Length: 510
Image (cartoon, rainbow, N blue to C red; front, side):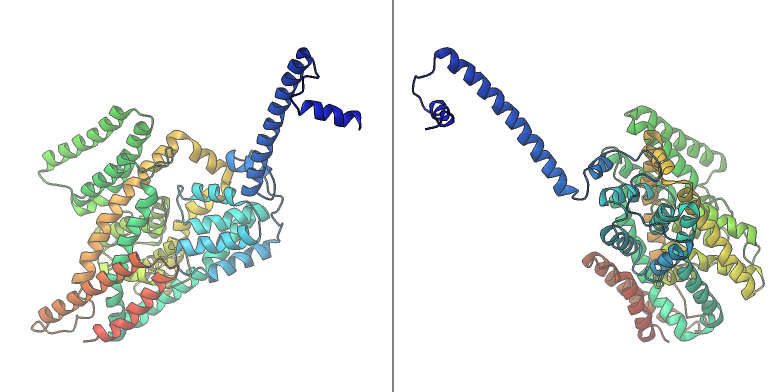
């Protein structure tokens, strides 16, 4: 029998062969070895858990926790494509951009992150979180981000251009068809009459979706009752024609203090705003007129539209306000074009949103239709000026998006991670929910009571046809809203628009 076996045998038995001193030394040694082994096992378990979450490289765990040290950190898997290939790749994304922003973002993520493995999923989620806060359509910004990774800033520019080009071209085409065919065509107007309540329901549903993340504090990642209260306050102020910019600015500043737990300072900021509003009412003996909602950037002479410079400015201001997507721009564009400018009817404004939903494009491109209408009217019903107006408002709308993204994601991330700025953006995003909600209800009223297609009806038959059309529109609104809440499909909005256009031929052809 070997000495090694005897030693093991003695250690694992209770025989008193060893002295007391040796046993104590052995026990102490065994205890230390056990602690070392437990420590090693714990470290191995942690390492295994890490590798289950991020199988490619442990460095990805660091990336998921710590922000990158520079703008193009951890880009080892990003292919260096030529400018032409970057443009073609994102042009393909643009032609397949059906179903709204979530479907577009899912397509980009599946192609470049899941299959292409350009970056890790945690990094993608962090990047997406940044672009949810800054102005601009998130899908376009993501395309530009990946374009910057592969081809530098010019690659990012080409990526954004390729993504928006198909939708921009198509909506210009639809705008042309609308002014040439639709204004006096019974069947054309019937389809758009059916689409108006459907689009109104989409705006209301979108308000709820935006609220799901806009009322979350980025500091606590929980529902914020303060943001909810600011949304309610913004809704009330909008109903009494309080200027959008004052509401957004005051609530953003107030929430900066509230997030720092300086509650009384935040409350005082809001109270000062209300005191100023009370003084205004006391001096003028009335609440502000609807013209005070915006800034009048798109005013026009009667029967005309805004000139090209003001059309570009309209897109630029709207694009700078697009925190969280296209629906955020709807209240401002409606106030400027319909309420203050009065060169666009509410029914035509709803038609623009409907067209924006049936093309493969970021929804924010519906503004191109508005710009086309502005140029068309300003140029004396000239198609060339309509095309110019569509181009200028799209340029203004996308300029903030392109500027922020091409400046560099690292700079954006630093700005968003700044606690004061992040709280300011949170305050604006939460406040916007209340403004959109009031606009959604206003669009609902307009879509139900619209007299689209009844211009040539006799005064005797007009009340009966209005009642009939309003009832049918109300039914379409309820059915659309029910479908939007019942089904969560990526192309649901597109199918609802197609259904509405067909249904209009049976419901609204008088």
